[in-house]
Length: 449
Image (cartoon, rainbow, N blue to C red; front, side, top):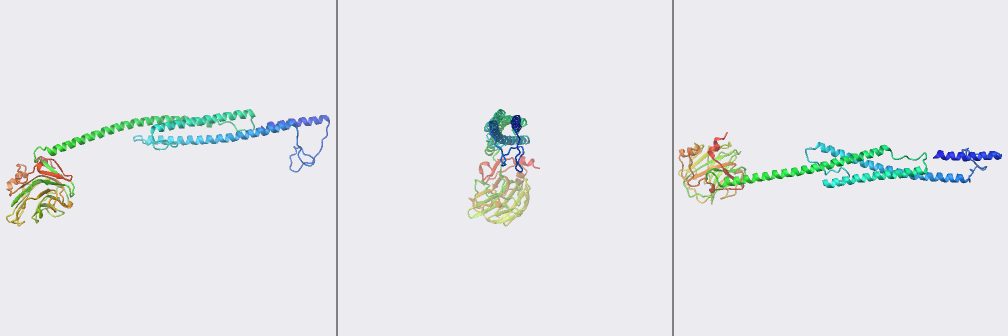
């Protein structure tokens, strides 16, 4: 553009000189101010010569208009470049977010994908809203790109109509346009893959929900069947005596209670099967308390002390050892005459003694508790004295049994229910989480290691 203007000025100047030469005009010498351009005309007083030629005025106006047009085009192009940079930055963030999401999908293919991450601005967490938002973003980006291309086309048309100068800015580079189109295409592919992944995730969630529901229903069915089985086992044992009482924890609220009380007695025999591995001490297998004497009859192993028999709160230590986690049959006999006692383990008499509450009758009307020591009749238990293990076939007689009878029960060759307290399902109730379960003690012992 500048070259074009200089050429026009040159042509006009040449015509003027030739016209002056043809009329025989003379040349005048004029002083030029220091530092001034020699090609410019000056008056004698040093001022530039102001041309009043209409052609020069028209050219000057044309130049000013072209300059204004060029400045406007520059401003438009700068604005377009800013918009393009913003679009390019947006596309770069989208592409980075898409690559990050794809990396997480490949690294966590065996787990549920976390779509709560923000991968493009402010995407919603719902899969349907995510698809809609991605589609809207794509349409917005396409519209912005088309608007930029239209603006650039109008700018190019306007610049071509006004003439192209040396300082004119060219159209949008083809490389940038291709890059934008390529990234838009990649984003479209990302959108399609995202839609496919969301559909697949929806299908997987449905399948997982159905499988979880099926597993839950199966577990509940098995649990109901187990409860029904336990209820049947608790209420319908093969024989009334073929059951056990389980006391698995050392607490003050798990225990069994014998519904039948005792009459006044001058002798007794207590036999039972028990199994425990508690340490230290197995606790209190049973206790009998009456008003005024909570320790009327107690069998207890407390801490590191040996097993003790209490009658009317008088104590005798028994040479028994049953804390090996195996079933053992024990029997204790006592008579008021001289307070004589005997202790049997697995049919064998391991110890005897006398002077244990001699001439004291066992008082009637008390409470028999399995697994706890009573500090008051029927209650006020101490967890440190609780029995931990299993009990079965607790029987009580109002006489001293013969050794042969005790041996027969221990080796399962005979069974003798107690004439005072027999081991019958309906005669035993459990409290606080203790349980009753079917047990054939002699068969169970055969399979012990």
